[in-house]
Image (cartoon, rainbow, N blue to C red; front, side, top):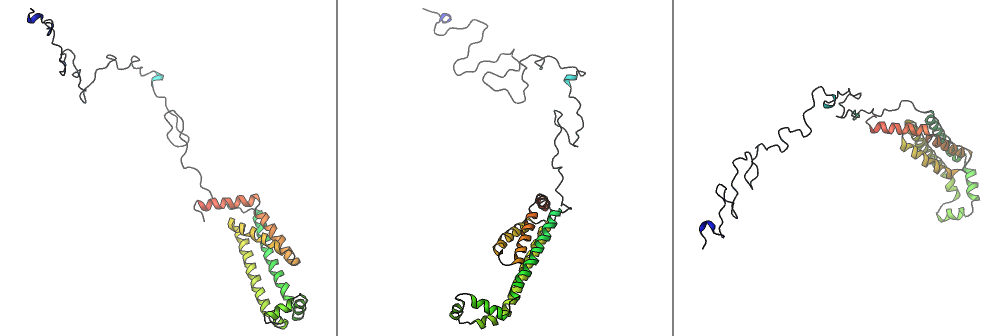
Length: 257
């Protein structure tokens, strides 16, 4: 029969040693482990943790002396751009110091040539358009209308006669004169706008020159007007003219007017 000291079910540890913790209990703290948190508990906030590497926190040895050139930050040269350089010594690129686009002051001679050519085309077109109708008189108009096949039948169907049409000649001439002046004003406006450097006016001049090709067989003056208009458009699209127009567009986008 076993005694309590030799009970195999509840063995006692040797004298002087603490009892091992049972299941669900915390282990007693070691009084010699100062600064260590209890087993199973996180360290308290603000408590200084022991250095696992020993007394010197630098794992590579002692701090380099003050006169060590490799342990100091080298002096940085002043930045040529007026800004502080990067920590590595590389200068900071300038930010927003680019010069704003300026309005060009010198107009290329190609645009001047285009201006005079378009202006001359408008004047010649107006003269040719007006003279083509004002050279008609009553007798000439009557003979030309009578020579057209089926014209008298068409006039009778409309309730008119050749004499009625001939009597309307002054009103027709006035209308043609007004139309010629309107076209002349369009040519003049486009010419001045192209000379000023307007890209929109240059596009309209191109369209007008293309439409004028439809009237090539309308007489010598109309033909001359078409040639002058095409020449003006060509000079408006040459490189110096295009560069000038692009520079003005960039300057207007930057705030110049």
